[in-house]
Length: 416
View 1: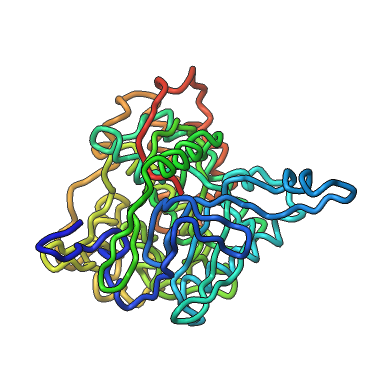
View 2: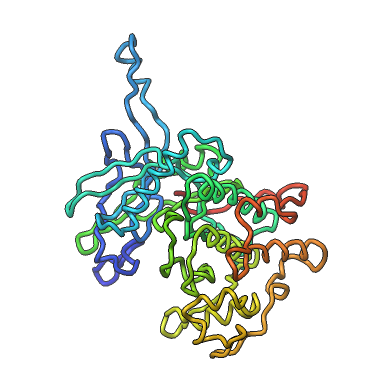
């Protein structure tokens, strides 16, 4: 986009701290590792750009002619994540590579249903750039994120039957990460859950569009930036958990400030040890967001665009009630915000809120009661009381029989 002769920032260039990061200038048609040919841009993020590519690796088969050998080249579609140049030990890029390699080892001999809903790497390699080495992560291409999907529905509200399907399957992925791999995702949100692409039609469509109307990159401050391709895709209802840059080992004990502001578990908020249960908390918050089109909590000072700790705490108290005394007494925040009995003593005052009032997309009755019981198993102060991923999978509300999906849905979104 041009304004007064100058190119306006596009996609990743609009992100905070863009100029402090070193993105690799991917070009459509470029071949990585003598194997991955770039077809089109699929998306971007704070630490990478995402590209649709064709895996053109040569598979040697003995006793074939040269012509037949050419036919033995793999031609499958691949999603290629090209990361920014960052070799710091604490970098989300380095952490994601490390965690993907760990998950890959556990997946080799595993037979767990959660593998079907977890986005593992098929290849990890490095390329040289102007500022150093860049990690590249090859995965199976998938559909849009649940965040993008929400944007296609009125008021960002997904159909109840769809939410139930997505959450139920997502819990299998989380269970595999916890029980088998010993890791905590810590960043579960609609942005980091993709929908499964059932076939290659959507990627063929992208390739054909790129062939007919080649993308023209813009140049701004010497950087080459393409616009991502959007596509029509059929909704599968099958989630794929992705983005492991913030993943942590469950051991040794974690006690630091972590997790996204709107999904932060209370034990993190209170400065207490945290582990597997924070992911279950995130699922509870996300379930309500998908059903209602808005987040349960809003602990942000929107004037100054900053997180407000007491505002977060009091909103938790509003929905969950006062924290158990045995929990809050272990927190360094105890005497600042609570009295000796665990009651809130700070500002702002406790809001008059309830899960019953927040949930409007399920009519009052038996099902709503079952749903609220489901939510309350996940959204509790004490992580020791919170349901585990294994326990919540068989929840009565999740297991309620349904006739079918509420109509076939087609959406416009960005694949990844």
